[in-house]
Length: 275
Image (cartoon, rainbow, N blue to C red; front, side):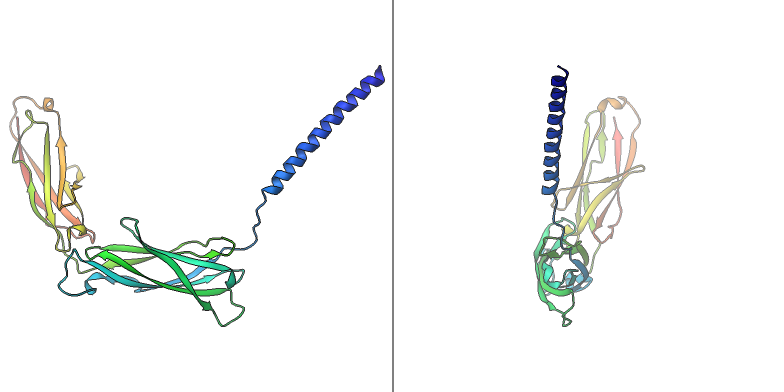
């Protein structure tokens, strides 16, 4: 009887050991399958040069007279030195894109072309060149970003090199042409008031970055209606005011700004608040 019990315990432990061995084998297989071949290296963008290299003056493009509504096009040449520790032949491609920093829209994208390995046969870098035409409204003032990246034959990516290109022109300050605002407001009879400011800029209304209303304690950016008008609606509760009180004068101040930071003349308006 004791021998049978010993045999049973032996079989039990044998089964446990066999099961554990199977689980260990499965785990080893899983870990083996998950191993990624890390052979190879990512390229490195050592240098990017662009022509024109820093500033594009849109007033020097096209014929006179200029209109702020013109669409102008200009050419950018791009040159990149790309290094790969595995040798220049391991550089698969060098894509680039040109991005509008205001809207984040991609204006152009393509691949730079391998200009050939340097005469030194042991060199691990290549020169890549390319170009693109960019179209913008003449009134655009700001910057564009040129993004360049290297890709290896094994699919490794370099860091993206971002080069800003400033876009400028002979700039003029915006002008506030008129303001539509009530002279008198009966705050116990109506519960809202809309202010509309009409602004212009000889560089084009797209050059106006914003129109602002200033009070003693706050600054408010008016909503751009897209047609040169900028609005803000003020609301209140008619029950917040007593049925009878002395009239109150409120002074509102307005200014318009363009993307170069130039401001219009400051315009003030006085509103009389009555019951």
